[in-house]
Image 1 (cartoon, rainbow, N blue to C red):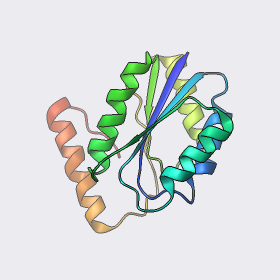
Image 2: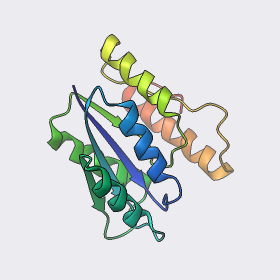
Image 3: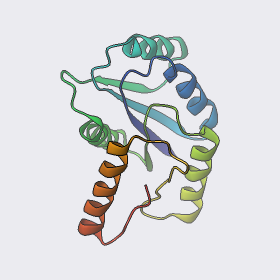
Image 4: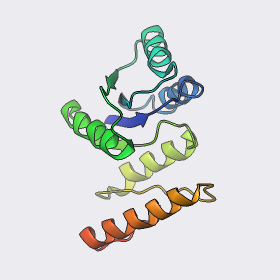
Length: 153
């Protein structure tokens, strides 16, 4: 099964190597491609990604934005690119490594077994600043208005 994982990243040099290694080890049963959209990181994120990919010969596409576009547009850019990889399953996730790869793996297995059109993961006990909580609530409202479904996260 062709699994494409796409993620926006911004200043993730401290954790991206461990996160990518975890993803690679968890998804050995899949034909895995990873698409990373680097949203103008000002740390060594790009170098770290290039280093780990070249050392391990992974199927990874690194897209470097010319300007900082933000999380949403970078996510959409990664999703568009993922469609060129002939995916059976696309997983969009943040590149910050705040997710347990074991839970991500379980979600993918559930998706394969249950075959829904969309599977949404929800973070619990999320510690976010006030502006982020308001942004999330507004985004949830927009999704509900457009789809009739209220996402949880």
